[in-house]
Length: 311
Image 1 (cartoon, rainbow, N blue to C red):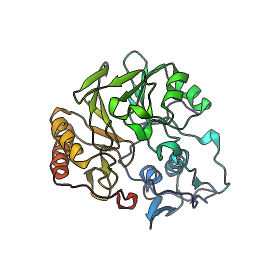
Image 2 (image 1 turned 90 degrees about the horizontal axis):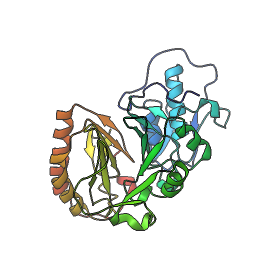
Image 3 (image 1 turned 135 degrees about the vertical axis):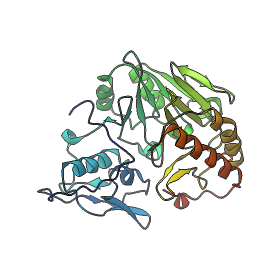
Image 4 (image 1 turned 90 degrees about the vertical axis):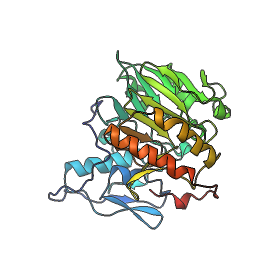
């Protein structure tokens, strides 16, 4: 496979016309956990039916077939299956370039509830990893071919399961916030307090307690905001949202964090752990972030309910 597939537009929709492929037969099995990853990567092809994902129609051309492969090789339960049953490793499209700077790792892990992870290219040829995919020696070797990975940046405790393993294998520094230190007690770098910290040239960590006590945003080049589980783009509302039904620490603290932080943020991309990604203009994203902060101020604690998330 090519180390860098053609850029992937996560905000685009599939559905180009064309004749059916010779051997259709994609399906989603009953291990699906309704995490939404497959629906993000193969819109129009995979949809939500009840509280699970289902194939709505088969791919019609090579571009749509690639989207099915993106969904299949990201699915943390490997529930998206071709007619043959087993995925062909030669068809693995990851890492998938979102643009010249950010790559989506794919291969989401059941130990991080299927969270997305990313590789961030840095000037000089190095990379940073934001959160992690499932652990795999073959994946590590593949990522190494892109350049040295200097840092593994954890957004919060829910995504820390493979952090030490990846950091050790890649000879990288592992970062986490003190609020979630129990999830990575052997981290090499510990963020403290709530003030922004530069963790590398052009990369700033913004502590954002709320979803968890130690949640962090990482903003690169004043363009890319890796938001962890603090907020995401919801197709259901066509807007930025917080997962208010899955706030482990404090929704009031999250509101305070957003009030303190959004005025400082400059970004065009929101790239979350869970939920949809989105690219807007800088002005549009700023307006959406300010509106999100205002809405979050009005929220009150509620019981955890995964089924209530607005994907």
